[in-house]
Image (cartoon, rainbow, N blue to C red):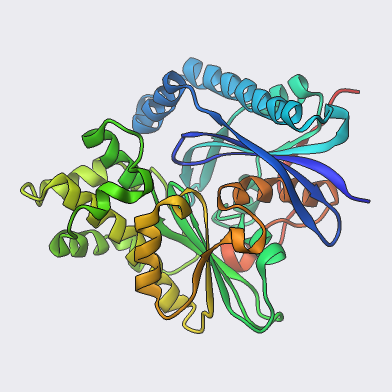
Length: 372
């Protein structure tokens, strides 16, 4: 029997909470409705401040942020249900990724930290909530991310054609779906997605992003600056690998642009756009040389200039949005965490060791029961 789920996702860009209503059965995942609840600017600022100064974390602020975000996630779920004319009793479970504060898989003691208290989500909504998806994979020796490739494989695999799914959020990641069904999917974070472009736009335009990439399109790529950026060691690391604001952040951007002080801001934006497109293209060429089709999801799919650069760099390969396969690009990640919640409740593994590097498949997440 089909069941209804809600997926909740807040990504690296911190622009809002995606809430997605999904119908799932054993053979099908159907997206029914979705909203994005804006992240209050003051709350976004507090989270960014916490991420920017991890050595000076105030535990009282951390605990309060966890609680406040939990309430915000719950409100987003309830708003979605109200809009969809559904009752909490209609929903089997919520899958909540939470908000990543820090992700450090490559250290003596690997760990990851997401906040957005799932106890509060379950209490406010009355709906069983599945959360804390990353840590079990890390406990099994994996990177804890990316986790969405398992859903990409279930939803977008096309036997006979090697497909690459490119998710461009704050960071960018790819999922390689082999043409041969017996071959395991692979995937990894390629590097920055929208994060550096957004930071630069905020500084110079006073806006959180470069709408449709129009500003970047007005500039010229600084080839020397691009070469310096692409020389960052992350790009040459072999997968499995993941990254985030811990590496690609305002300080990283400042260090790069300080070396080219006379480059006009629009040219820097064009170069940052090219960095995202080129690093994705290079990753596909190296790790999926037989790729026959590229599908783009995430907020970056709405950046027209970035999509143009992706299409130019990937030619003659076809590049399209996941909307051509029935899932709007902005709702793929939220749908994925609804799907992962279903996997957890059915006692099925949700990670792909061929992607994360875990020693074996594991059931992801912790279950927080709804009201009795």
